Amino acid sequence: MQVLVVGAGLSGAVIARELAEAGHMVTVVESRDHLAGNCHTERDPETGVMVHRYGPHIFHTDDVEVWNWVNRFARFRHYVHRVKVTARGRIYSLPVNLHTINQFFGKTMRPDEAAQFMARQGKDGAASRLRSFEDQALCSVGRDIYETFFQGYTCKQWGRHPSRLPASVFRRLPLRFSYDDNYFNHRFQGIPEEGYTEMVARILDHPHVTVILRARFSKKHAGGYDHVFYSGPLDGYFSCRLGPLAYRTLNFEVSIHKGDYQGCAVMNFADGDVAWTRVTEHKHLAPWESHESTICYREFSREAGPDDIPFYPIRLVREKALLKKYQTLAAREGHVTFIGRLGTYRYLDMDVAIREAIDAARRFIRRHERVRPLWNLPETGLSGRDNRGGPVREEEVVS
Ligand code: UDP
Image (cartoon, rainbow, N blue to C red; front, side, top):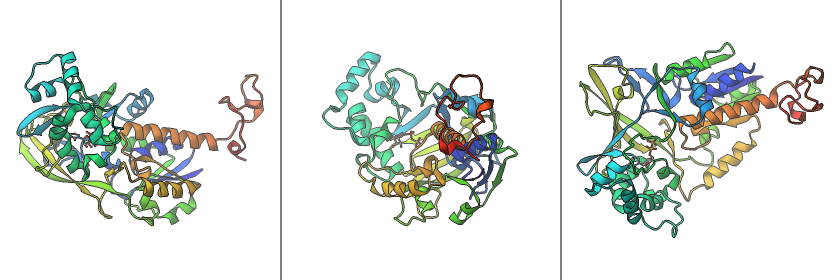
């Protein structure tokens, strides 16, 4: 079949590859001038440092199949993400761990003591329903830590008070009663040695895949294809006709220095009166390289306007109505599958985006594969069933 994939980010690239390997012909259109969407990386010409142009992307997953899948296309270097935070004139370690707790409260507690101490700090969560970020944070870490590390940062990052954001955003971060300061809990963690853009280029490097950059999708392009996988903004597909969905976008202030600027890849700034959320020093994202100079991105978050690159879909606790309406419209587009962070309007990590893309592609492939004639089936004794063990369904038979 002829398939159009809109967007050459991770979701689009993975779908394109899976479909191409199954024999479909795929065209990928991308509005920007580069591959890899927001995980795009490029070498800074002045310092030679590999820069994560849209902010730091660390690959982490517990999904063995996804890990093996990406490792087909890139050599991943072991990398453990360790984040520091500047708050009220001091530096702490994130995610909140035994070091953070002891340092913050001026104590020398062991793990079980800290766990009991934090349980007393936390508000009784059973009474509230823990629907909001704030409820969840107060219950888990108590008011002092919440107000120092989370409240100001979250207001800056999301432009909304944490009482309006869902608890799931807070739950992205672990709370640990050990000195483990790895930002992520997942079993596999790394960064592609040659960057994400090179990895996506290899994913798309298949004779059945044609990639067109700087090509803005419009619905009239879909006509020539049997199916479309769309990874652009969900509201944008419908020309925002029900009103725009809200996204946050980021601005980066770039600076170049000699040597080492901050000693770590990411320094968060938790205080509400500091305008930026964090500083990324990109060379620390590739500790296997060495560079004399260093390039830093100071990150500012703001509401996305119609011409901005959307970064984060803003899902609020109480405002789901507009999204539901768009989802209803999307469900009626029979020949279009909406995928990825923007296409499904969700805050997705890279591994989840890839898992969902693999699954979506395989569902499509199963629906459209030729069912082998019965006389070619292996001797299973299950006559009338296909080679996956399920009943042969009408829609699977392509004449
Ligand atoms: N967060 C915070 N202070 C921090 C780091 C994170 O308040 O120093 C909050 C913030 O609301 C953020 C959420 O925790 O959106 C999840 O953090 P994560 O690092 O997963 O956010 P990401 O940068 O991946 O979007």
